[in-house]
Amino acid sequence: MKQEIDLAVFDMAGTTVNESNVVYKTVQKEINRQGYNVSLEEVLQYGAGKDKHQAIIDVLKNVTTEPSNDYIADLIFENFKKALQKAYETLEVTAFEGVYSLLLYLRTNNIKVVLNTGYDKKTATLLLDKLGWIIGTDIDALITMDDVSQGRPHPDMIYKAMELYNITDTSRVLKAGDSAIDIEEGINANCGITVGVLTGAQSKEQLQKAKPTYILEELSALKDFI
Image 1 (cartoon, one colour):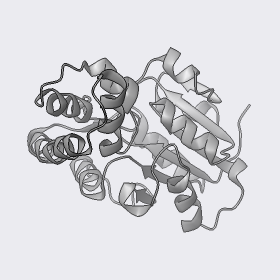
Image 2 (cartoon, helix red, strand yellow; image 1 turned 60 degrees about the horizontal axis):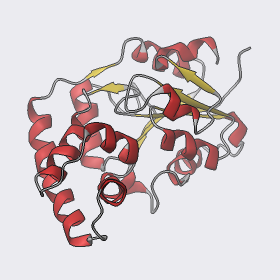
Image 3 (tube, one colour; image 1 turned 180 degrees about the vertical axis):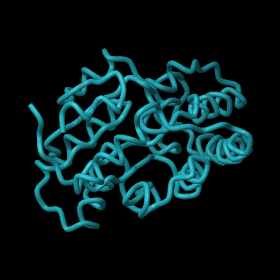
């Protein structure tokens, strides 16, 4: 049964954009450069979908026995930003198969499409540039951590997207992402539909814990539901 919506809010990396997990691999690398031994799976478990400074704090808190150290987290974050910029200079970035046709389908049916992300504006804009996507032509808007005071799982980015288009009925808003925190963000915003996708950071079992409306193999399968 298809459900009517006015707004679709999609996560970027791992959901619409395939960047081979380079962000979380870079987080892992920079944490371990400070003498830790953190696996990529641990980074994804505790950091996926979050503002990357918060992700670093949460990874350290959950996988190390040392007391919280704001200086170390700040240092790792600053090194991460420099390393990620360098990695993105040569990285090939693509949209997942079928995603662009989904965006076109939604916008043709008068559904606003907004990308949101735990990245800062500079990083997110670089991803869009690599894809060749233009705001106002291929998507309706981009909302990043720089646009709100509180990141995921707080609903601020979704509320910002609704505000842009004077949408007040949260039951007609869909949120999709590849991590449990994306789903929590949608639930906290009272979205009518929350969707987990299996193309990115977390497994079906991890996504199920957040209780989304649907779990899909890939975002393009949404066409069957809306």
